Each structure stands twice: as structure tokens, then as C-alpha cells.
Image 1 (spheres, rainbow, N blue to C red):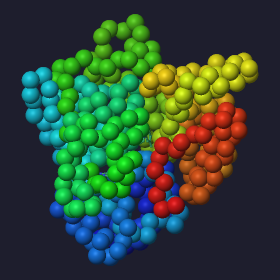
Image 2: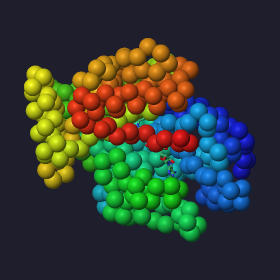
Image 3: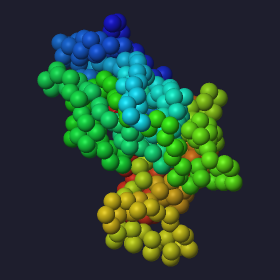
Image 4: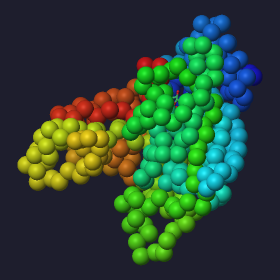
Length: 347
Ligand SMILES: Cc1cc2nc3c(=O)[nH]c(=O)nc-3n(C[C@H](O)[C@H](O)[C@H](O)COP(=O)(O)OP(=O)(O)OC[C@H]3O[C@@H](n4cnc5c(N)ncnc54)[C@H](O)[C@@H]3O)c2cc1C
């Protein structure tokens, strides 16, 4: 495995910002992952794990240690009674796995079509879209523990999955390198058709197949620039930049009263006990940041209010200033602190 030096990181991210890595390596096997970890230790170089770079904002100063891109390939599947188990290397492209699952008539991840990034990145923030979350179908996650050098297998329950969170981005943040993820899908299962946008798409049409759902999700995502497509400048982003805030009943009542006093209707969804989830996009748009806002290097996507877009030549500092402006204005208007979804690296 080659260890390169001073490698620009911006091209490894979907947002396209970030300075160089002091050291950079791509590991295609578990042994290479171990080799890279040993290298980092022996050079006293802090380790940063990279998947597809679709949920990152990397600082203009880059990363002072080793950036390790996990490229472990492989999609293997076996069928049990009605259940199909897919054992997938962390470096596989997420959407290639979804395509393979749909092709094999296996349901459980069809609504997650088109999410960029690697398979190993998905358990980290428990990716979700159009009514499915990856935690619905994860059976286990195998990861290398950087503290003791051992491989460990986590059952789904041990991963502490919640909305955009898991054991891996909370209590064990930075401790594990995910090597493989095993999914339990339903062979010949019915597609999941619960999300409003999807239901609308299929209104008046007959029962869609898994492939129909995948196609619909890809089309809807493309219309919102949430699908990375060459030439679509609005997709040069890190996806949704803010999480949907989860408010207590009292916090939601206060917010709702304020919205009503302004003649606005705030959408919301039930969350955990006595909590409401509020769309961050609504808060952003109703704080003056309409789609297409901004005319410098950085702006809001013309197709999605939650995506901060690098309009070309943006620096990480400009991105961060822009997100600060949004957070500040939403807080002033609505008293809600928006939490970032992408991970900041090197700040
Ligand atoms: C256009 C667009 C649309 C998006 N839509 C969605 C969406 O609908 N739903 C959603 O949930 N997300 C969405 N995202 C966010 C992003 O695609 C996901 O979070 C994705 O799973 C990140 O995976 P990655 O491999 O790119 O991770 P990276 O961005 O490379 O890394 C993200 C974090 O995961 C860690 N990580 C990555 N791989 C590993 C590994 N093997 N072991 C340990 N840690 C690892 C990194 O260290 C970092 O902390 C979108 C992003 C874009 C650009």
C-alpha cells in the first residue's frame, strides 16, 4: 500500500473544499487498514477515516496526520428463509449495494437509493431517506478497535442507532474503523411506500416494484439536487447541512405559537415520547434563506433549502461563515439552535 504525502483532500469530498493531508493512503484490505494504522502510530500522525467524502467539511489547512480512505470491496449475499444476508465491504459505493439488493428482489434499502458515499459511512450517522433508515436492515457491523487493535462485531442493538446518530459518532467517536457491514433484507419483500413524496409519485399507479421505487427515489432526488450528477452545480454539497431539530412538547408549543402569530403553519412530525421533529428546511427558509440565496462562492442550493453549495472556488472558511450566518439567524428568529449534520475535519 502506497502512503502518499501532501495530498489535496478537496477532490475526495462532494463539497469540494479542504486542504492537503500530510499523509494519505487507500486501504483495499483489512491487512492494509492495519498497516495504515501502524504507520500512523509509528509516525505519531493523527488518523482521519475517509469513506466517500459526502458528509465532510475539511478545513482549508487540511489534516496534519494520515487520512485513510477505506476502500475494502465486496458484496456477498446468501439466502436464509425469506431473509437475504448481504455482507458488504466498507469501501463499496453505497448505491451500488442498493442497486444489487434491488436487482436480487431484496427489500429494505430501496428508499435509500442515490445516497452518495460508502457502505462503511452509512452506520456512522444512520443514514435515512424517504421513510427508511439503514438501521432498519443492519444486522451487524464489523470494525477495528483502534484502542486494542482487535476486530469487533457489533450486533444492531449495540450500535445505539437513533436519528442521524449511532455509537460510532457519539460514545465511540473516532475509536473504530468500520470494515464490513452485514444487512438482513427481505427476499421478495414488498417495497416500502410510506413517505409523502413517494406516495404522491405513485398516486393512481398500480403497485410499484422495488425497481420502480428505486427509480422514483432517484428521480425525486435528482429534482432536488440530492443526487450527485456531473453538471448539476447544486449537487456540489454535503447533502442536508442541518439535522431536523427534535423539540420537547413545551419547546414545540412555543415555536408553534410564534409561527401562528406570524400567520405561518409549522410542519412537524412525532419523534420519541412527547417530542416533535421540525423540518430544519422550514426554519431556514422562514429565516430569510430561500433556495438559491447567496451570490458569492457559497450559497443555498436552488433546489433544496438545506443544502449549502460550493458554487465554485469556495473555501472551507467561507462555508463555515455561511453556516454560522444561517445558524445565528435561525436562532434569532425561532430560538432554535440548528445542529450540523456533516462532520468537521481539521478545524
Ligand atoms: C447530495 C447528497 C445527498 C445526501 N443525502 C443524504 C440522505 O438522504 N440521507 C442521509 O442520511 N445522508 C445523506 N447525505 C450524507 C452522506 O451521503 C451520508 O452521511 C453518507 O453515509 C456518508 O458516507 P461517506 O462514505 O461519504 O462518509 P464520509 O463523508 O467520508 O465520512 C463521514 C463520517 O463517517 C466516518 N467514516 C466514513 N467511513 C468510515 C469507516 N469505514 N469507518 C469509520 N468511520 C467512517 C468519517 O470518519 C466521518 O466522520 C447526502 C450527501 C450528499 C452530498
